[in-house]
Image (cartoon, rainbow, N blue to C red; front, side, top):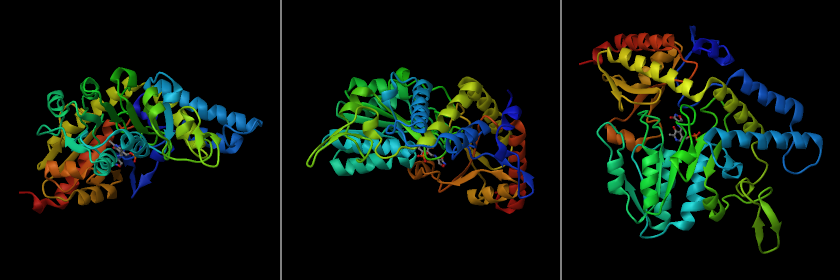
Length: 407
Ligand code: 7TS
């Protein structure tokens, strides 16, 4: 299937916005959903909505099979050893906070180091900053290259025997850079620490193999990979999840409850208190089936061609500054002369083109790049060269509109 055929499977894309065909280039914020995912959600709510893991009635069994079946799909998708190592969460943010509260808070203390980078999304930054404040651990940052990339050598020089945890994004949501998480995991393991990977921008766009990366935790969101909002997964190695404390308490996650003490269910349910996100998990399972039917390698190849074409075309515009390395995932973050990124996004929106402007939840990185905001076009499997052409045309129009601010 080519991108144009894939596009037909996404009903939302077939509409006009402000009198122009919609060109959706805000996929790093959230992707659109194909008909297969919408139908899986509808089928669940129309035909077998029920709570899981409790009743013996038929709908309850169907819902439980759907929910646990989705867990197995996630396991296979990221190549975890066992489904018990996959915890359903609300998304990447929740997954990373679980590791911070359930693991780091209990196993990290004064004199220990937590290592992260200035490239991180706030979701993979603030939890560690706060845990460091709470525990007295030292927060350290791997020095960045001028283009914002992270080298193995810089990681090697920052990580020490005192480093108990390294938190790093696999793919940057601003620079598109692909970080050497496998190599960094090997360094931190040599020093006895754990490797936490923020996979929010990786899982939708490239083949993830948590065993090959040898990361200890890996968090991602369903909504950025054609799935519904409100669902994601946290992978953790069994031995770490076993010693990690539950973060939420209540129904579903207990074994026995006594007046003054309680015991927990086995993995992964120990971490899934309350009625879980059943419809969301089933929708995520359908999204995994969908992206796998296209093929993760095919998705990456398509995005590589698009991003190269976009960078080439955009570079021809006077005043264009593109951030990040040449080798990247499918997104382009840029500024254009002195035009404020919000103005760029506003003019593009009038042309039916959706891009994001702002700090992209990466204020430390904006500081590093010495900008207060940037604009970003991010691609997915349904975007086409025509979308890039529309973007470039829109940017030229923006430039003409604000022409006098170019020096
Ligand atoms: N980590 C990275 C690298 C991200 O890009 C995002 C969301 C998150 C974590 C948080 O994911 P959530 O699903 O829990 O919200 N990034 C963006 C973005 O770039 N624009 O909007 C959301």
